[in-house]
Length: 250
Image (cartoon, rainbow, N blue to C red; front, side, top):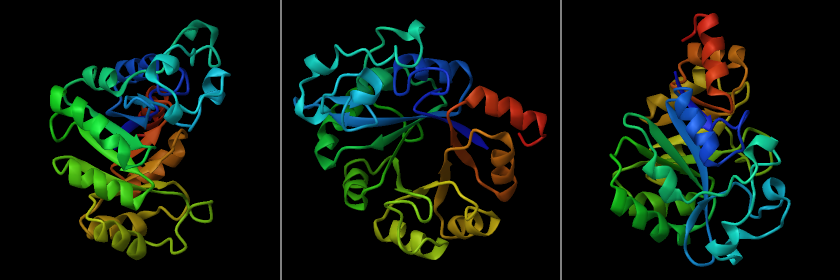
């Protein structure tokens, strides 16, 4: 099972920052998942929320602010004083530090308007088709992403059953149909007991890839590995890897 560091090694370091991503690579994560939004002047940046309040203490809606304002914020000290003065990085800077043989999973939090900003950096840095993957909750946006970047795999994000925003029909057949109709490559699902051996086998049977989020407990991850899940997102890649090895599941 591949371990994908959720927003970097975000259990220890501030999410969606260079320190969190660097730590994930040090901890030998197979991949890193990041969230991408766009500033008012067209720069692709890493941020999960629509605004910066939670991670900086200052509320700026990134979509309405220029990069020069966003780049000044401290998004590290809330996590730990040693990360003081950590700033929001550009997508370009994270793509530059992608090690050979690892994967960068890019969750598109903006709409299709961010695609040209992403394309500009991809054209310059030219990552291999296996190095970059996209995911997002909007079918429309992910269709546009796939059209813009046919060389990369694109996944549809799906909330767990009964959560706000989850599809009304949460079963393998319905989710596979939704994904295949959009001509996407796979599903990224919020984990629950429904994600079991039967569900995983059905999704794979449709020729789709499947990943899940978020597993920090080695017992949960071991169950998923035994059920056939080939990758999982985690906030603690080193700790989860050690736990899985102790259980003989990795």
